[in-house]
Image (cartoon, rainbow, N blue to C red; front, top):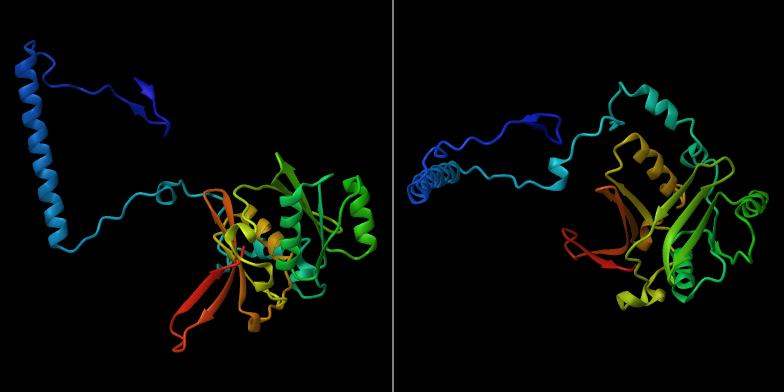
Length: 268
């Protein structure tokens, strides 16, 4: 008897034919039961198909244990959460009292792909500029950025000539978050040209940030972009949270002539 990963006690499996010493007869008995079991499963499946019931496949998301910190902002009972969101460090942005101004920098001596990735972030994030650190410490950068009225700092780290980390600092009072980067694809690797990215302010889509920590992360990422998107440019950036990963995509969309369907083109 041993405990399972779910905290329940697992009893040893009982074989009703273990007392039969003849291996051939024991196997025949077992195959007979197995055949009847498969026959019953097939019968149940046919009955379910006859009733039109579709079996929902198991996925990582459906089997995931529900997080106790998940919140629903539309629920009136979450007054404490709404109060915290209305008084956090990003309230100036979401109340439209302060426009975002982002500084993008790198680790010391960045390689080519890291520099290209930083330049593409300046095309994606409105009112942002790229600047080399010149061996300047992070604390010194923060102090100068506050003096020049920046709202956020992005620092790109690299490993083996590939960008592998992103440090996000919200000014002036934080918070600070570090994100691990993987599978970074710049525009040229997607066989696109950077001139396809217009200067219009994009729409921001934040999906599946349902926990208390997820709300803070989503508000931090959303505060990098201007709160007033220009819909004329038909640009959209998406942050999708799934399995503790944040997937980022940059699209340009277009409507068909009948305006019933939408076509997407990935830009980066």
